[in-house]
Length: 217
Image (cartoon, rainbow, N blue to C red; front, side, top):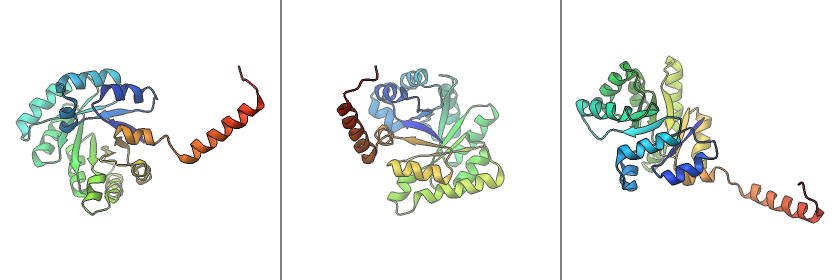
């Protein structure tokens, strides 16, 4: 499963990309607002740091505006993926972008029926929001399972990008459910490395090694 970072913090991105484990980046209007920087500038900088897909979201809500904004965003760099809302207008724009070979990420997906429509429209990625469904009283991970079954039934090429990930357990569950990718906040990405037994075991190994008085170099 590919791991994307959900961030516009370039300093954090540089640090975590150094692990070689970051496959792409997703952004949204909220993250852009928090950055306090011009959107086009932020997206261009991120694209320079990451070779993989970088999702940049349109702000328009009607087809004409989405198409105009999406084309401008796609022109920033070859790895820009135009992010569109899962609305009727959003899917019309998605289909138009598919005709022209522009990659898309259809976001704010909360049902398998919506995901089916996105795949039929030619979306490159579909972003089901796991955590928000959990907050609403549903079992968000069930949506990943349902979408996986539908896409496999009909050989759709659209990749499932698990979003609204809240913790490492979500990442594991999304992988088990067959998500192609997961977009993760930086703090959750950092937590993936951690386990108390790993830390305890390493501490013991270091103490035992120190007691030998040896040096490898």
